[in-house]
Length: 464
Ligand code: ASP
Image 1 (cartoon, rainbow, N blue to C red):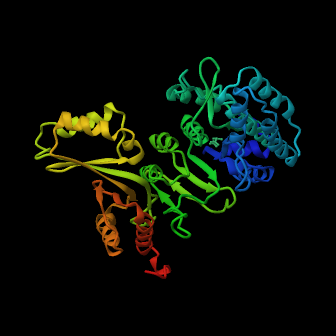
Image 2: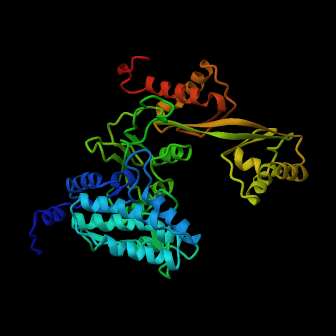
Image 3: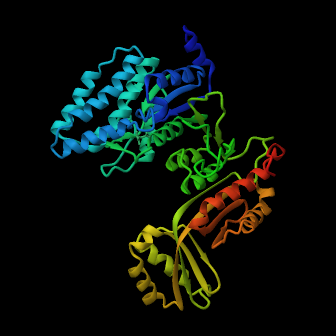
């Protein structure tokens, strides 16, 4: 049997659960924040694999380190001096290192970056240095192993992630380690060239790590205490949701609620790894737990959340008996596919097809698209209505949800809000409602008010 010396090692042996904890930009924005997260990490020995973003904003007018790095790249690739921009990057990290009273070879690291910007400036390599330096500093501060994702997050030469290879390589790299800090946001191809995910992509690294080692939990630490039931810019002090399903989160995120990158949800949901959104400034708050099934005994609101987007158009195509099996709808969708024009949803009726499409995408090809539809499908009528917003209402509490959809629509009608389109998924509450853009905020507030009146503890809500 292995001999276990320190308390830390004893904790590791005793803890069979593995938690991957990812800390976002605001959680690593300064030395004070790094101190906070290290006490969060140390407070639970199950937090063995840590993923970090680059330092984000410390105050509203601040600039994220990734943006400072991209400024360096822009200047360097235009052949201009980037000394000022690079110095700002250096100052951000110096403040962190000095604040943590560490000895860290920052000048050497900055010199390597400067060299690359002078000789062969590369966008993704430059952008990735924020996460690289933060992870190195954090690993040293915590006494964990530093993992550079260029060894284990595998991209192809076109910058596409190779998911299967990443899982294998990450698993092989991480499992032998007791504790590690992994830089988020980037990886490399077979030639060692660095590629980044899209902005906000450290969430994806966290989820890849959680999947690779089949973690028991993926914690995503940020600057809010979970996912709000409605947009706080529209509804005053909305409630945070305690539990939601992966599908609910995907719908709400797609329709505008942003806390977690949607690709990060996809991979975690495949392996049913629960995701816990937590607030670095309020570690005592349990945050939002995202999982496939609710834990037993938890009572849930029939409406989990509401979100939406403005800037939608509704295209109405009419032809007698489109649903007669002649393939009219399939041909219609083929036309969209050939143009790579995504649509939000498509409803087919007896004599009509309704398509909801983002107005900016439709506007760029409307004339061509309509003439192709006219020439190929010979509809009786084709028309478009702009200035709509689309609202998603989700709730997976199947039994009570059966009439929640009707009551949501009733509530909008009572408020005098015109309902232009409705798309209701079968089964659980999953409504997409089109309302005029100028009533968008009113509609969100009305649905949120309805939600609160149906809260399991609605007695505490004065307005119900
Ligand atoms: N640092 C990157 C960004 O600002 C990635 C991330 O934070 O997830 O987008």
